[in-house]
Amino acid sequence: MTNVVKLKKGLDINLKGKPQEKCLEPLQSDTYVMIPDNFHGVIPKVIVKAGDKVLAGTPLMFDKNHPEVKFVSPFSGEVVSVDRGERRKVLGIVIKKDVQNGCVDFGKKNVSSMSAEEVKALMLESGVWPFIKQRPYDVIADPAVAPRDIFVTGFDSAPLAPSIDYVAKGEEANIQTALDALCKLTQGKVYVGLRQDSSLKLKNVECVTIEGPHPAGNAGIQAHNIKPVNKGQTIWTLSIFDLIIIGRLFNNGSVDFSRIVAVTGSEIQTPCYVKAYPGAKLSDLIGSNIVKSDYKQRFISGNVLTGESVGNDGRINFYHNQITVIPDGSDEHEFVGWALPGLAKYSTTRTYLTWLFGGNKQYTIDARLRGGKRALIVSGQFEEVFPMDIYPEFLYKATLAFEIDKMENLGIYEVAPEDFALCEFVDVSKTELQKVMRQGLDALLKEMN
Image 1 (tube, one colour):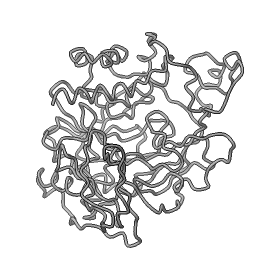
Image 2 (cartoon, rainbow, N blue to C red):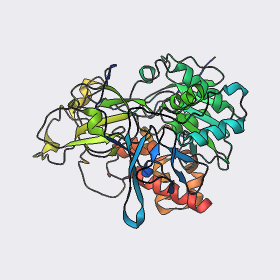
Image 3 (tube, rainbow, N blue to C red):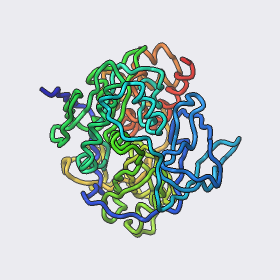
């Protein structure tokens, strides 16, 4: 019998611009960029130079801290340039894709006949290892540390998130192969969190039905409510999107980083899906499918809560399966806006009359903070949207002060910045919670190592 976890805390933000289940053909980018900053905590060592010919699966760089962790080209082509910034920091590896799309042949594999070391070696060599994240610290998993358990998020609950069932259609065999491979890498269990209406039928894993609002789809939330990670323990996390790419490696013998990306938001004319590669230009993926306007628009790689504003000519993040375009709002001014009924404004409280419409009304929200910086107000708002047995306000304060003992006692090893995204959204103090938690986790990792 499938386990069921029911979450009461959280918040679903019903935004305008949900993707329709149809896939459009996007423009082909002239160049694609491998951006080291997409891989948090990695110190890149570039091993290619301008003019080099590469295949899909050819290593472009590796992590100096873990040389066995390689980052490969997602397709064949020519390295145009290696862009660097201050102090020779690597900003991106620019690649021009060719039409042949040749690939490194890693050989088709039968996972059931492979050992754990063989599975790990293939994943490291082929460049799919960076899809595996670890808790604590929310960084790429250390290959030398075996996980207690592995948690796979089988749905995305973020605003305007892509439908897993639609994206996974036709990829069921690859997903199952990837799960079989992951089972080889842990002495514990592989847990998959699914919605009750999921069409995925999976074997050899522990399926858990997750009920409740966002952030129910976050890996940390699922792990905490299934089997929490304690000090001295390590768990790995992935998503179904990652399993598709990992499964292709074993079944096809080559890497295929292509993915179905949701193009969403109130500024998109026809929200839909497109096929894309990591590092593609957002303007090519969106094309003319955008609302023509005189006001400023914000182009986000990812969702509105945890994504990054990259601009129309920005690149889609290696880990993102969603693009969101919303009004920026920086060029708007409202006279006594706080005194108006606000029938079109979203509010988590009953500040405006929009609560009378219930949860079915779709909102257009811009990127304004609608307030300045101020002292943190302890109001209990965070706890209402934070479905962990953790005190988020106290953990934030301990992290800000970097009091390690308090951080450990308050659950720092279980969380990632994305778990605080909703707290940041409802915070009347406009506190950059995700940024502070990221800095705290990085400092703690450095201290512990």
